[in-house]
Image (cartoon, rainbow, N blue to C red; front, side, top):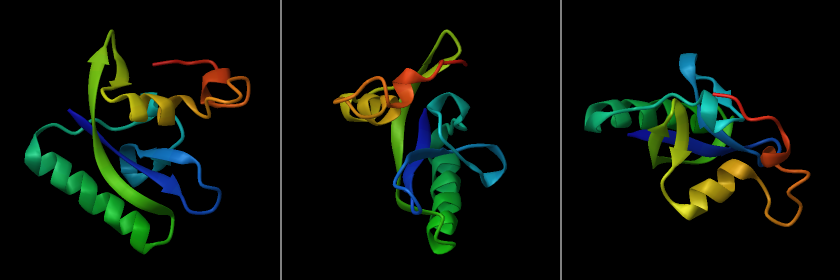
Length: 99
């Protein structure tokens, strides 16, 4: 399972590709892609976002779904999903988490 991630061009925020080709700020709202064809389609949608200058640095990342919640596999992606580590009270981790 994978999700498509990037950084929003206007402010640098980490975002994920959600439904309807929208970019969402919470990994819990990301669209999960399974299989090579679906991931390729998601990357194509992400490339369109880059072309439209919405995002930069599009790539796919591995995730699991635990109790209905999308969880990044790699530590780097867990940190990106949570926000800055220097001030946890300002990052995404300061917001309420919902599935």
